[in-house]
Image 1 (cartoon, helix red, strand yellow):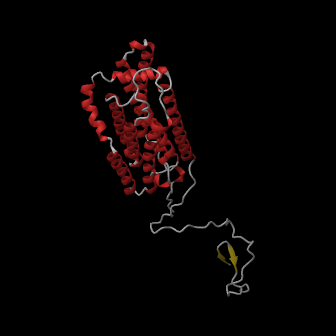
Image 2: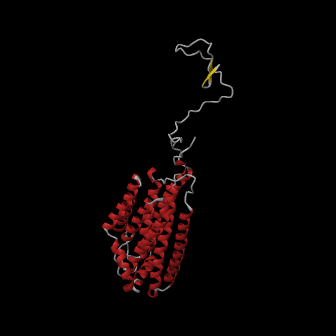
Length: 348
């Protein structure tokens, strides 16, 4: 007998219509033969072509977490506005910090003014252009559109909230410039920094997050020094950018996935270390801001420690920025990890 595949034929049997030897009934299998499996063609190097797999549960969970973080940040924008703009105590604390900025303003302004001068329309164009350029060089086409959407969305949202949606009732009876929440300068600085965080290679993101947090905090504190904004304005701006970042990362495109092995950690040790440092430092700064707020509200309205309020407001800006950038770093690494959605090369 001669075996053909998983069926047997005999040369002495009658020939079929095609001239081939007659076949035994197909129900007679070779001893020990199982169901034949189709073989994939190997590449010249001997490896099997990449096969797409189903998205990993961890990847889906990361996207859901990013969306939840974005929604939570949007809610916090309202909470900040409701307390610091809509209540007497909140306006007291904000106003005390605003007045306290006169302390050492002459010397501090020489440092703060150049920081604020950087923020302009040309800065936005160059920043977004650089981020999109990096994405295009890395052949991440959808990611280039994603970062442009983030920057535009965050800055348009800030302007709409400030001039259309939110209002400010003067509850103190003092001079008031009207609603200035959120801060436009801080939104520009934070959104451009996050755009770069999204497009740089995976290993460069921890350093980018640190630099972005530092630049955003410097811009926010500089607006306090120049009495351009109150602390709540800056904090709300950071939260607006965090909200847009969470929403954008929840819809991370395939081109936004990192080309790393699915076996690598979702968030590497370097990213976790950077995030924890930002969270610990930010938490300490927020604790200091909370103590300052408590002291301001405990004082009589005509005896408010304005310098304490000013320093506490700066701590609040620094703390919120650090915590937000630590979270955005972790979310970017998690949503960018390919997980089981990656294409894995198997070798024969």
